[in-house]
Length: 133
Image (tube, rainbow, N blue to C red; front, side, top):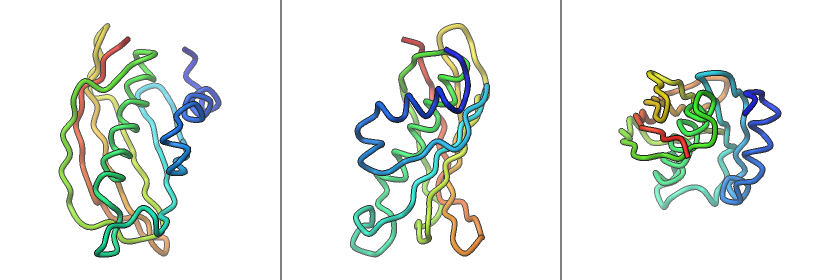
């Protein structure tokens, strides 16, 4: 697989759940990926901040894109997420990078931020293992 933003966007466009949420791939380079999601009312839970499942989706999908940038077609084997603060703002941005890559697996980390009025705050950190398929 050629690692270009165009290729990454084509892959994201094939993901119906990502399309439903409105996720956009901002960067896709060897060892790095960045996803963005505008926050809509439909993505919030009853306290007014983004549902943890949406934040988790951002981390999971972004670490898989980062892993794919070095492995090709892949899936998430496992990941862990720590929520730091509620997501209140205009958009979520997930930034993932490959910490280590072998022939069949990569270990990736992701930080998810919320952006509001030009300011960016950390809301979650994830660590995952990605496997080539």
